[in-house]
Every structure is written in C-alpha cells, then in structure tokens.
Amino acid sequence: MPPSPDHIRATAEAYLSRHPGEQQLLEVLFTALADTQDPTHRKTFPTHVTCSAIVLDDTDRVLHIRHNATGKFLAPGGHVERGDQDLVHAALRELSEETGIPSDAVVPLQGFETVPLDIDVHEIDANPAKGEPGHQHVDFRFIFRLKAQRRVTLQSEEVSGYEWRSFRGARLTDHPRQAGPP
Image 1 (cartoon, rainbow, N blue to C red):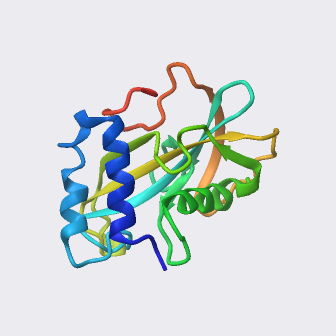
Image 2: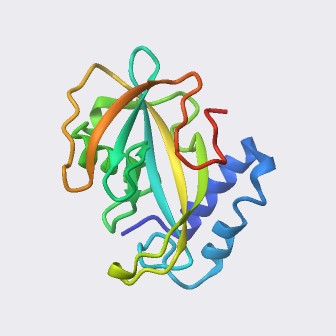
C-alpha cells in the first residue's frame, strides 16, 4: 500500500517546521492531499508526489543521473509505487532501480532519517503520447550517505549516464527554484 495522505502531510509538516518560508510553495501539495484522489498515483492530476534520493559519497560529491525522458541530470528518483511503505522507501527503491545501489548501501544523514532535505515543486510538460496533461510533481528529496564506494549500474530504459558532482555549489535539480543545498 502506498504512503497515506496522513503520512505525506506529516512528512511535509516536519519539513515545514525547518523551512517555514516554503509554506506557500507547498500549498499545491496540501490541496492535493485534501482531494479524494491518491496523491501518490502517477495519473493523479494536476499534482502528485514523487521521491528522490540525494546520495553523497565519501568526498561529499552528489550522484546525478541522466534521465532519458528529460535529458536532464537529476538525483535518482521517480514515482511512488504501491509497495512503498513510506516516502523514504520510495526514494530508496528508485535509487536501487535506477542505479543498482541497494538500500543497505546507504544511510540517511543524521537528522534526515524521516524528514527530506528538500521538497521541490516543478512543472511537467504535457505528454499527449501517454495521455498526460501538463501537471506538477511535488518531489520529496531525502539525503543519504554512501557507506562505501559502489559500482553504479544504470537502468538503461530510464537513465543513460551519471556523474558525481561536488556538493558545494551543486545543483540538485535542473529546476530554477533550487540553486543548491540549503
């Protein structure tokens, strides 16, 4: 069963307790949570939840992967699935699927075990081939430390490259709101 609206709301509220200035940005999330549709379902429009894993190596570089759908280098992540027990596990599943890095190869940074480092709201263009209108993703981005160097094995259907970028000054997303880590 995917994460419940109550779990998503509690996670967002914990994030907002650290970043109260982002309340207005997340209004689209709270509107989606008040709806009767499942906010984690990829066909819930105009807004649904996604999750990403920000992974730091032992030299504080951030893993970025090139997503085939957009051509952009982003943190590993994507849609929540039915078997994801919570948002953290959705991010870890996406990390494993897209990069081959298993969930037991990373640990959350202290203080971020259940609270995301960032929540990013961004627009997704319409995709008539998939019957999808333009919509918004509310991406919960959790941060993890790689326990030991791991080989990255890309899921070629969705991703086609990766880079380790310096954490300092790194852009964790190609979306303009977030210029780097807070």
